[in-house]
Length: 271
Image 1: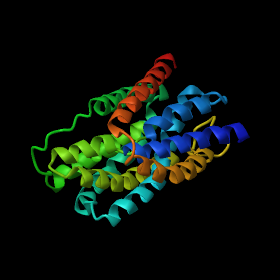
Image 2 (image 1 turned 180 degrees about the vertical axis):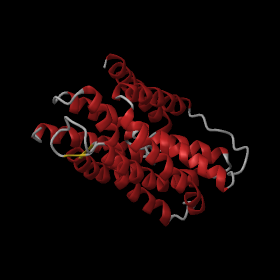
Image 3 (image 1 turned 60 degrees about the vertical axis):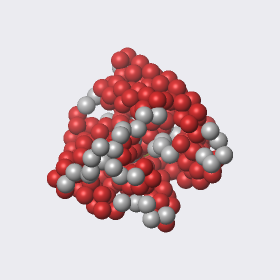
């Protein structure tokens, strides 16, 4: 597959859009990236089953860069709970490796597409209703956080997302202040992404039919273009968040997510 100017333009627009939305709404770009990368790859001859897997893996790889940028800003404000990061990270690494190196490589792309659609629909409903769990308890002990981290890492690896829609509600439910929960989730995005990407690269080494520029399941051209563009526009979205009605925008974005989830469900059921 040649990297035509049209492909670069499509990937750049995707990076610009997801970066801006990440800054504006405080979400990761995985739920937006996966359907569109799937479309881009499918339209250029990549088998549907493989296109879904590559989209999930490439989306996760971009989180390595967005996480670094985000956590630096949060750390300067002193709101990252590094004690929680230290307890959740080991479980995240183990769960991510099990997911990306084992289950991800064994599951068909159609099953992953259906699972992604269900996960995004759930996340969109959370966003649309703006429901927040009532803080009713404290963070569990080391063993409990190890298990929770394993679940977060495992689920994130199957959908190509940074885990924020799981870790933030979990932490706020455990009486962690919302600003600290968001900041800590951003910090957790790095071990989630690195561990899963390692698994995607190893498990994808012997896969047939990968397009030019692939490193395992990672499509490097998309990773580079999207990472650069999203890195540039995320600060613009963060500034716009102070001027725009974010609550209403979240509901609009949730409606878009429903449409993307419907597409991925169709993709999964028709494959």
